[in-house]
Length: 463
Image (cartoon, rainbow, N blue to C red; front, side, top):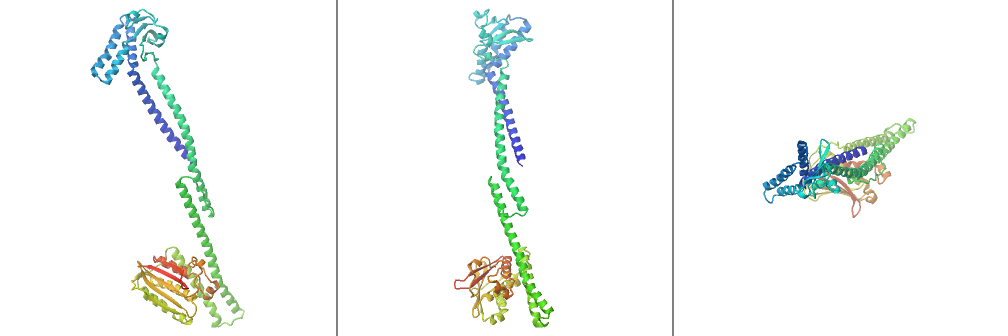
């Protein structure tokens, strides 16, 4: 990835600098040519050609003033044609003025034409000869053209030399810019690829099962966000793995107890310790029923976790369903001298729910309340409308739930009093199943301690 980023940066740099070079070269050439034309060198080039043609035709400079008069006249006429005040006309007039100062000398430097007739026959000075332009015919110098105060002193290849210098300066600037840009590209590519490399390595370790690491990534905001997301994912996977292992251990523990009881009783029957009668078979039957309940509860939880818990919803009178469930507890309530009160504060609307699953929630809540309510006390169930939900509270009059256990009470196989739970034949999954069923209905199941004592479980079901 780092190599691809650097190559991409290099391609962008080359394209950008190439475009700059082409545009700068064309612009410089256009500007230089325009400048030279504006200040007379273009006209001098045309005059040089006319002089060369004249000498080639006449083999001498006699009568050369006719050529100069013709060249001087042309720009002046063009300036007049443009109209007074025209920028182009002023430029041409300026060129014509410069051409009127032209001095022509033969190959020996002897002046054959000059605006000042007194100079004809004189020899060009050394400095004038150096600034004059040589007129060549068939590769031989046949004369010189001198235009004092104009661009005539420039060398014949002035344009190519100037453009070459501009081109070289542009290439040097492009080279320096390219090197700087390449260094920046290396730095930026490293800043991008380094955190990505760290993320990739961390993701590979997570894929191999190492979920305990935390990724400390520094870089662009998007990369930092991705690193935090990977950290959250690793933490979530770690919690899931921890819960899976704990669940496996809990299931093994819960299955071991009834199986151990069954094995001990069977061995006692085989050894003749217990007679083979109805009384001896009762513990075996009870442990078998516990195993069946445990397996069924685990199946219900697994379906709920997978979102596949089947619900057969219909219009349900929740108050009537509560009375029906409470009636099934009358023998157990009477045996423990516990009273059960069911009351509705408001006239309740019907809810769309699975009555069997709602009864399962109520059964688990009442069974839990019965387990912790002392003899002679009462259990209270209260129903009321609360906005768009129906609220059902089940309160016992026991000792309440320890504060540290409030967040754990719905965990699978969690028991506030393990020995008492085992004695009651509970699987430790009832409250976890109740919450899952409530959530499957779009509701909630929560718990708190009542200010006057005892625990209160609150079921909320949407209308």
